[in-house]
Length: 128
Image (tube, rainbow, N blue to C red):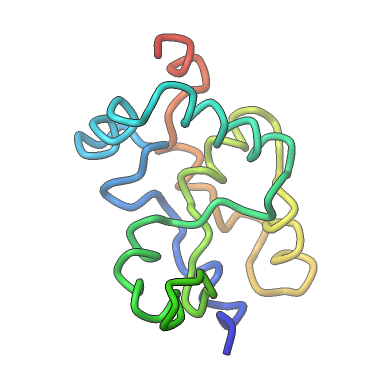
């Protein structure tokens, strides 16, 4: 059974380990990614590819639910990464997944307001 739609939008602000936040753990994760990985994530996010970027903390916490017995990824409980949404907002983009949430009355238009204020400035990536 797939994720219920409300679960997709459970987070309103970046988690403590979000690579799109200024938290110590988020900064460490962002800096530890293989060269080009974060840039690839950002490119996909800003070009609305791959649907959405999910919160890795929620995804990992529910790993046993998100993979079948053969190790094939079949998400059951995933949540949109609020930090990624906030970052996209700072670039002037409202991702499709968010527009869908608003359109289907699952979230309010200001749902990710806190995420935007807590997300890293896109200029931060110029230093990687």
